[in-house]
Length: 413
Image (tube, one colour):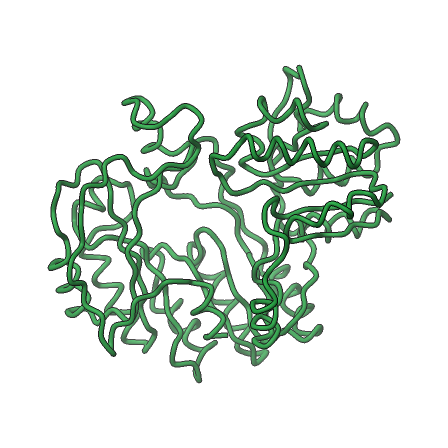
């Protein structure tokens, strides 16, 4: 059984420059598709199938190697549906005997359009359905019988959710840094990022977390980069995780967080992972107004937000934030003075501006759709309410504008 797994349909690999850069900073797996990595590691434990992952679209001669299954991950929403269809057709032409399957949120949303060009689309999380597919003797019959695979004309289907995250296996990695998650999804209901029918928030046990960390360290890992959607919600879990990393003389960097979950205990443990690191930052996505909290559903208040910033800085951790603009209640106002004053008063270390994007399935997307402000086949759209222009934003030695989270993370680790 030979399986080809593709993480991105468009790019034919990283440029030589970036390959060298990521090799030098010992972070070779930052841009790898972690959904495919977890599926591969889980299936590797339970099956004998040969699985090969391409992070980006391989050259078409790869499809001549008689793969039994070609699995394509389509997680990121975008609008170029016809381009995808043309690629499916080319793959089918070059691999007429292969079973072609899709997975990921984008594939699920477009299942009715894409199913004419592939054999099946995985619904929900893929570890168990993919393992079952590999084990099935009659694979096409299995795809028709199980509800977790969407096939043409199927009416009885549902999404698979892995309830027990402890079943997941550590993923393959190279270099000295590992991308790691110990929770899945977010329990909050922010109107600009909470999707309809999102899977529930789940956690690994601390025993499983420590087991995975031990494994990665035994394989040479020195740094852990957490990409959880909602870290710090379980204070005890995160404190024990960060303390365990410190005990093992490794470092940690947490990309996202809901500031409402930040506590002194969390910060004490987080600072412990980074005693010698001056550039460690906690990322907070927010625009500095009370109205933002009142209308977006983001937990907490503006006053609590400011208190948490002061708390973070007491632990000598830097603060980086993204100011999001383009909400429907905003007028044609220049927020520059407000942002400049906020950055100076609270000594924000790095920040960026981000125009609000509407994603299929969020409350704001649905509102724009009802108002006929976005086209039928647009799954992601720039905010139709954006009228704000920013002028003369402060940039000086103390306050540096942040353009790429991954750049700062690599520098930190």
